[in-house]
Length: 143
Length: 105
Ligand SMILES: Nc1ncnc2c1ncn2[C@@H]1O[C@H](COP(=O)(O)OP(=O)(O)OP(=O)(O)O)[C@@H](O)[C@H]1O
Ligand SMILES: [Mg+2]
Image 1 (cartoon, rainbow over the protein chains, first blue to last red):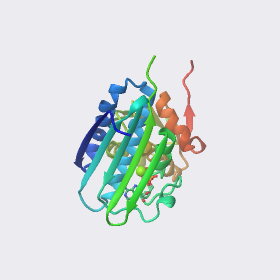
Image 2: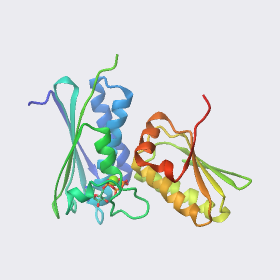
Image 3: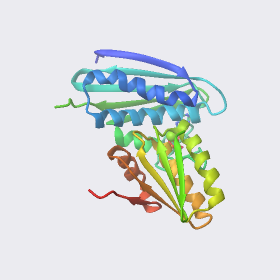
Image 4: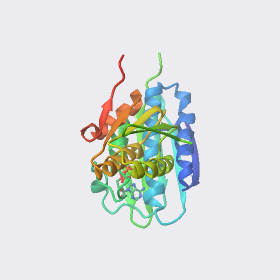
């Protein structure tokens, strides 16, 4: 299927850019005239994926986070968040709720949040090459 | 400042302001812990009235404070949760370790 509209954003893996990443996605998706609740859900899911890229993917170094946003027919939006960081050795284990390699201050809930706030979450990853997280959500229009 | 602290009769209240993510949570955590570790309150109230957005870093922030207060047998109370923050709190099952204050009405 061909996208009706698309945008790309990339930025350095500085944690201060987490808010920029999710705000950029929300700004682009606002053309779908979404409900505040739907937009907040997507913003939250994007925040999780971007934070993971910064905190885990680029754990020991700076890198670039890439976001692609595509809009399809019937209010379908696909957001892909990608890093060229360390990769995930076992994706299934990583996606289990409460699993974390992040230590005391992380809850291990990022993937669970993405799954519950989006229609689908797809993860591909290669150790030493990076990780790509694809979030899909249908946006119903406001009244 | 994204945290405003006040202390009265063993209760330390931290009013949080702004979006909570991994970046902003760090500063909030440092501000809260600094004072909490000195005062060792029996109750730490986290007030989310001024927080329009939070991701799972907010849950990490809460869990970390529950753990810390546990060292001196204190507990954590959450208040001022908006609907969208509540969604995150419910998903996390955090209600099992921190009390949630609902405002009347
Ligand atoms: N982009 C990534 N690169 C490398 N590892 C990742 C990436 N994303 C996730 N992971 C791994 O998957 C684990 C689970 O991620 P998830 O987001 O569910 O929890 P968390 O980030 O550890 O905690 P939280 O999101 O609650 O703060 C991480 O601890 C990390 O080991
Ligand atoms: Mg995470």
